Structures are given as structure tokens and as C-alpha cells.
Image (cartoon, rainbow, N blue to C red; front, side, top):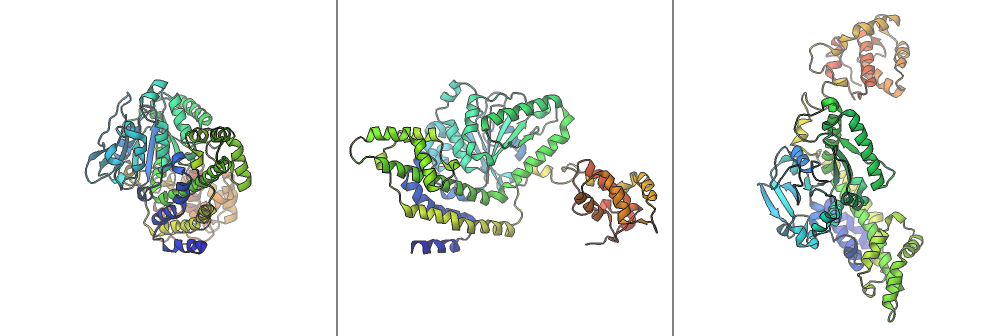
Length: 532
């Protein structure tokens, strides 16, 4: 009967957010609650966690330009903003959309059920006095929220003086945000002990992590290459994964470039980062689904660990000595569960951290294994999640194109300052003359050596010439399709010149257009373009 009811649940879901909320409350939360998951790993999820807008977390050492980066994105100051070369941002500031400018202090923020911050009250007053929400009407904030964090300092004294567990707070945010941006200053690349600790605390969220090498316009190209290499080496040592983290190089503020040599690189990198941030609203439901799966897998493993410890405890005498023995041998318990339950080693929580947390627990109050609770989570992972995945795709298809708009994102959308305007296939877009005409005399010389018949060369003759570019057949095939404007399988002198122009575009490192733009259509063919 239990199984039958589980199967019917997904049919009642109105949307992905509601489906995730219901699955969590009915299937995952009971398992978490029974085995004290919230005391060990992460507080229980609230309704606001499923409904909130995508969030971007900015992390970096002081004076790397975190607050200026937010100012650059929004093109507007936000309440509580302070910028300077010294450590200015000493608080966590959640920059969110609101009808009017205003600041909500931390203690008020954690009792608001509409905000996803209620569980932060566990970090106490020392943290809440350093936490606020800056609300303002801004088009960028209609799609995303941004979390500004205190600058990370070096030295043991700074870590102690915070009065709260900085790395633990960042880990709490990391679990709930959609993107984590680590900012580095091209001038001072030393990664402090506290920053290394923070990056390690974010280790389970590498998929959300992006790195920005900021203020790169203040050094020469040669220095930039060295700094970039040093950054990759340092990150490789700390993050300790075979995959390379994506690093965006640029100068993220609205000031003239000091060393403009790498302008095109900075523009391309900024555009890539903006595209990444703009995709967050579209992928928000998928991210929440992915995070719930990660959480469910950890909760399952946690249940096996806690129930195994309970099983090993004596009923009357020797509880303390047995507890110490079990904590010391936790690695063996991990290995045993891994073998018996066929669980991947990567799903287990950090051993040292788990041992530390277990020291303060009363093992006799742990729950024994309850198969029905685990079955419910197994069913959720095997069946309900697959149905929700299909719903995600349906929602994406039916909703209008969702992306972040306003602020700095508008400046790169269109017009002569849009990314790639007037370059590659867009060259000559606003000129009266046909841009291909500039080099047509040299292309004509080659054209007439191919012995045209009735003013046209055959595909075979054109192919022999086009192959000299050494471009792959897939690319040359696309160029042929674009250049053969009248679709007669032959090229006249204008079409041949166009084919060579497109080859030049590709050889210069630009992408080919999916369709031939109007400004590249040969003058004699305008108004007579044949569609496939």
C-alpha cells in the first residue's frame, strides 16, 4: 500500500518547485530528522529555499573588487555599499530586489519566512550583527540576487576576531546558491590561509564555482601570462581536482583600461561570464533538483552511518569506551557500509569532520535502521526525480526565454558596442559597399584560372581550390552552402569571392553565421536569395 501511494504522488505536482518541496517534506525530511542529519551537515530546507531567485555568491580576499563587481553588474550603488583599498565590506550583504531602497538587519532577516535565510540564526548574534539585506529596484535583481561577503584576510588573529565560523557560513551559502564567483586581484595573488580554508570548505560545490582574475588591465601582457599561470598552479594545489576551474580574465568596473593591449580578450571574457550568469534563471530549477539529489544521497549514507553506530553500542555498560572506539574506527565503518550497500566512496562525508561532530553526540539516542524511510528516499531518487526532470524540460520549453536583463548586461546586447560587432562575418554590417568587394579583384584572378563555363565554376573545381585552406570538410561544406546563394550547385564570380571571404573569416578564428547575413549577400543576388 505504501509503495502504491508513492507512485501516485508525482501526478499532483503543479510545477517543479512545488514538486521538489513536496518530495523533500514527505520523503527526504523524515529520514533527515530521524538520523539527526541537521546536527551534522545542513539545516532543514524551508519553502523559501525552493521558491527563491537564483543567487550568486562573491568570495575573495579584501580589495579584489567584489563590491565594485556588483556595482558594475547593476550600474547602480546599493544601500550599505562601501568601496576602498582597505577591508571595507565587513558584513555579508544580500543584495535583493525590492520596491524601495532599504536595509534589513540580520536579526530581522532570519525571521522573515519569505527570505531563504531563516536557518542562519544558528550562527548566533556575532554573525547576525554582520549580516544584512540591501533591497532596491533594479532590473538585474528581478532575475538574480547577489551575496557580497567580507574580504578574506590573512593571519590567525583575523580569523579569531570574527566571532563566528566564517568558513561554515560560506559553506551554508554555497549549498544554496547557483553560482560561486571567486575573485582574485592580478596584483596580489597570494592566497592566505583563511582563503585556502574557505576554498576547501567549498570543495563539494566545484560545479558552481567560477574564478575571476580581476584588475587584469593594470599589468602588461607578459605579466598577465605569468599571473594566470601562477593562479592556475595555486588553485590546482588547493582544489585538488583533475579538472581545471574556468578562469575569466578582465577588469570588471566602468573605468578606462590602464593597459589596453588585451582589450579584445577582456571583452570576450566578460561576454562569456555574462552569458554564464544570464543562464542562471533558466537553469535554476535544474540546479535545485541537482542539489536535492546530492542532499538525498548524503542523507542516505548518513542514515547508514548513524544506524551502524547505534547497532554497535552496548545496551548497558561500557558505552563511553565503545563510543571512543567506534569514532576511532569510523573509517572501517565507512568501508563496511560502502561494501554492503554498494555506495560510492565519494558519497561519504569528510571522515575527520564527522569524527569531530560525533564526539559531542549521545550514541544511545541514535535511531536504528528503518528500511521504510530509506525505501521512500530510494523511490524518490529512482522514480519521482526522473518525472521532475521531464517537468523541468517542459517548463523550460513553455516559459519565455529567461535571462538576466538590465545593468551591464544591456551594454553588450546590441549596437556597435555589442560583442563581436563589425568583426568576422559581421565585418561591413553598416557599410554601403559590399565588404567582399574589397578583396574581389584577387579572388577574381583565382576564379578565372578555374576555367569557368558561362561565368560559373563547378563544385569540383571550386572544391579543389577551397581545400587549399586546409579547413575540415564539415566547415568547407557549410561555407559552400552559405556561398551558393542561388542554390544551383555552381559558383559565379561573386559567390566564389564570398566563399573565399568566409574562408578568411574562419581562418581568422571567427565563427561562421548559421545563415548568410544580408550585408554579405552579393549585390546581384539581393532580393533573389533562395531558401533551403
